[in-house]
Image 1 (cartoon, rainbow, N blue to C red):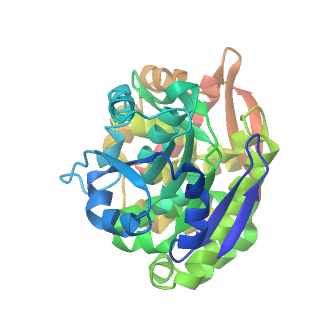
Image 2 (cartoon, rainbow, N blue to C red; image 1 turned 180 degrees about the horizontal axis):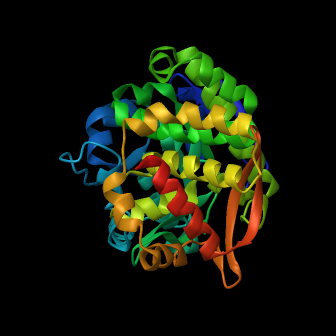
Amino acid sequence: MKEIRLQTSSPYTLYLAKDLDKTTLQSYLKPYQSSTIFIVTDNKVASLYKDKLTSYLKDYQVQWHSLPYNETKQDLVSMEEYKTIDSILSIYQFLAEHKAHRKSLLIAFGGGVIGDLTGFAAATYMRGIDYLQIPTTLLSQVDSSIGGKTGFNFANGKNNIGAFKQPIATFIATTFLQSLDAKQWLYGYSELLKHAFIAKPSLFHLLQNFSLATLQKDEDTLLDALYESCSVKATIVMQDEKESSVRALLNFGHTLGHLLEEHSDYAIAHGLSVLWGMDFALFFSYTQKYLNEADYQLLHSYLQPFLSANPIKEYTAQMNNKETFAHLLEKDKKNTASGLTFIVLNQLGKASLLHNVSLDLLWQTWQKYVATIA
């Protein structure tokens, strides 16, 4: 088992292993033995893994709350539609009905949407109760389960209502990834690449040497990649827990990514949006002379097979309208009266914040970018 200790306002540990470590998990649950443990999940995760987690909780009183899972969509978009205030209210109602109190424990057992919703409920119910993360998707394991960002989407804005709430621990187990489909693997892979691009050349080289298909079958190498990726996010979070400065680097690729998500009404999933968003960020960095041609060609070429297999022409045509583009940018949380903060890449392993980027510059670059993919 690998461990990463986060020295945040509420310090906690990430545990990474092929499976949940029962002894370690129960050491965190022991203080709540006289109370009820509350678990929030979704129907699909519950159908696959409820019995497994229940076997670890035989000595505890447990209540389960499952959000729906839209089986017709067959990917992570199926949960994004539930990232709403109504889902938060359903968790509050669940906790109230079963008499949860300030000494109760919530467990987020699922993907990123479940983690974000459960974390926000934990941050706000009774003005704050403890919660623990057990992420079950690659995307949530290397991204949303680390760092304490919680929240939900409101008025067509992505994560625009939320709170910072650190879990008491996060348990990352590769066993939960066995049930993921090809799209879900790709979406999580996008965040592995992001961490490699902005801070960890050694992780990029590892990903070059082991294909995504290989990672799915080689748990030892996968665990190494997860550890390297999580270490990047943990290091940045410890430098800037509340995103007042360098934590914004973790939004590399997210400016265009969030635009694509919102404009498509989340038909384009987060992980795929970030892949396209990173390619646009590379294009911007290169054309604005922040990134040299060698690094641009290396990283752009690496992304191409994934992007070609997942075209977005249907949406880029609709977004090639300055008014629509500007309206979507207005919702970006990095937007200020003087312009947007955009994350550029300076070289493989080094990114920086570019402040006060004008709408006109982004719009002009976007038009040039669209022409390259038409």
